[in-house]
Image (cartoon, rainbow over all chains, first blue to last red; front, side, top):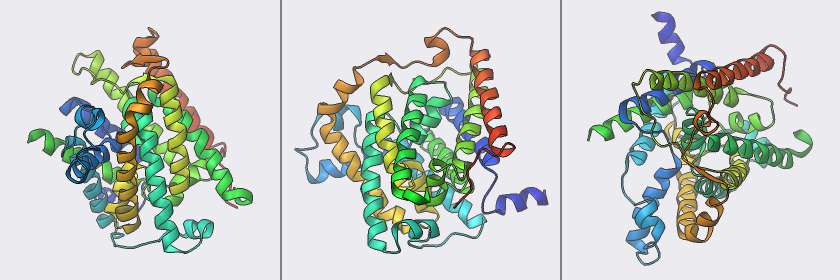
Length: 177
Length: 182
């Protein structure tokens, strides 16, 4: 019992142990609520709400009316759950703290400027969400949720993601790759 | 209401796993693309193997029916993945790990990160008609899973995937298939 409690408090688990937990969550999603995990869809539901409030004409289209209707969907609730789940996990390992620019490797690669980090994360977010839209899901909703069902789409997505991820890292890291 | 509670609970455990696997950190994510830390791959493949075995067993026993799997349209899935990988290697997060990273206190993820995802979602939604119907029309197989599409035995497909994953774990952990950090 003590061993288990001590393990839970560890900052970083073996990826295999954490992976088993995620696998069980994936099973539970299908078994309990006949749903799949996902993350990128939540941002589309939320931006639909915002868009319809501030620019109703522009957001009155096929996509925001029928494909991804705006609202606080179960996807949004799931994403909020992820936020708090990670918060609880960080609290158990004593690493929960509001902070900025805390990654040493990031600073080595891009430099210490905070504006640069915020700009790159903002642009990264746009690229990620757009790619997820075209692919039909992100790492959670397509790679994990599709992959566990042996969905061909998931493996095509994973192949694309690794191919361009490796090339991008090579370009950014240059000689340090 | 119940569905909301279930989604929230699933999210809690999902976020907990992401955090403990270290995926809320920039270096953890980018280093899988540099082959210097394979934790992300081990985490994902373990989750796939566990969930796959569980779900196909439950389906075999007639205890669950699968929800519609994400649609397969070869070019779109691949091109979307290619775009996604650029963002992931550049920023070191993805939608789920950004939410998790914001939860453990990273204001970088909570503010510019979330704003970026929302902006991307808006741009996607506003250009959807021009982009998606065309790309998803190419080689579209609909909502299928590999054993049904190719008429393979589920048991053999899941077993093969599991053995391949175990082999990969063995090669990484025991045969040193991982690069040293410079």
